[in-house]
Length: 434
Image (cartoon, rainbow, N blue to C red; front, side, top):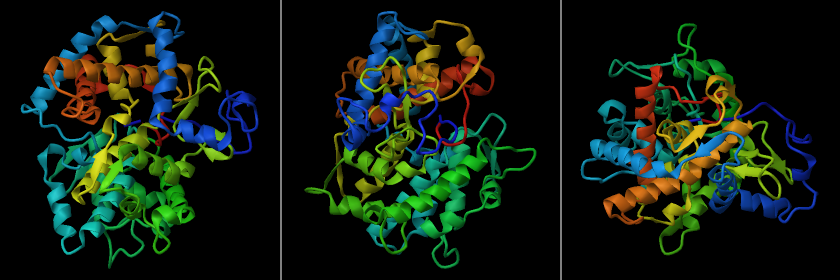
């Protein structure tokens, strides 16, 4: 899935970000209050809406927006949904879908391996797998593929990264006690993980390069450090990402967990793993970027990977009998498949041809605007799809429309338009964003 920038030390201003967004400068929200706001789904929509409104009135520097194309886009998405799920019984858009690429029942294999554990222990293991796999799911590049020995199948992009990380997890690559308890991810092993172990797990060699392998390794090593620094989330004994399960059980009310609270815990627990990001009050804001035309402080949050991770954690919680509330509070995912769908089908169009001819940093105005428009347009597409199908948001929440859905449709239209199904706009990846 995909987007990020270069390292910046926490004591310095991030390149291109004026001092006004640094701590201590007068704003309507400051310090930890601003951090809390920028970690919320409402902030994502509020800030993205500002750039969307500029595009609607023709004042965006980079894109036009044509809402008359909404019905056509919705019909395209519905056709894809019916092709994939004829009965419209659509699962969540999450990492679990990728684990069964090519129809191989890998999750049944996982359940067999987890037999004998308590329901809570199984959920902890599934959290471990989902979290590690999502964090490894940045753009893989056009040439990399993963060869699965068991099936003799080859997989590329997100499916390849998913299947590879699934087998690494099952083989105990992320466990410090590989012989006794292989099916876990723990802080000790993550901090000791080597680039060779990761490269071997992904089948990387001179003829099969994977974009951002060093960035992925650093991300996992920093995850190991983050697990140790937040024992209230990840446990004091043998800190594991999966111990978030216990946190959610303890903080549930009437066996209900709000989706936004899951996202909040993910953002709090994982904030320090992102390198070179904007900070406020010495707190890392993660997938948050600067745009000079956004009011107050110019900061635009997306939390794409964290929201996708949140969607991926909901199913193990449901298996424990917990009810997830407020699903549609979370936003659509600002990544290149959803954004490519909007661009390829004419909902948005570039104002300058070089936008499609050059590659762009994830911190660039072009990419920030593209992602912002994508977030708002996904809400519009979802509403139009529901209207055409006469279904409610409860019957067809955004997370199912993404799966059914816009992400699949974005990949399909990309394959129809361009060799290798590459996105219409090229993004410079360091292996940690998309």
